[in-house]
Picture 1 (cartoon, rainbow, N blue to C red):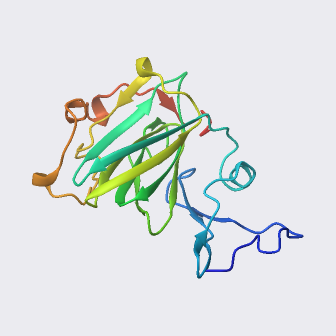
Picture 2: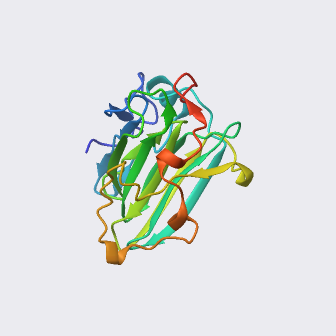
Length: 206
């Protein structure tokens, strides 16, 4: 961990505040902030509009959400249908989750494929889930506080979802079957092959 960047009150050149990593699916990104620490603790920029647009995607987030979940909770796999489609930037500030993004764009070479990443309060990772993807997570710790930024407002009339346990997706949620906790709604979503496909590969990711 480096020293704080603002000790002298100013600096003459921009410091790289995030590292962005590509995944096996185009547009899905893992972001790691640069931490600056000393005897007092640490500092990091959790979000910079300028750096995000330069390195990840040109979009404008309009809503921040937070959820708290207990061990074994599985939420997902959710999305919003057009014209209220959302991309999300997610992170964990307490505990640990397995976060998952599934490509549900018609015509995509990675249709039905997913990326899974562990997000924890300790690793400070963030996960960018573009438009055209279903999103969900499973809680791996006793409790998890999950925060996410959205680039479109919540629209309940536009809710969509696919089954978290769709065998065609092959997701290992890393939570034992007997410990899983789901809402009644999340327990009854259709499999991807039976769902209405509302996204297309030619539509923008954000």
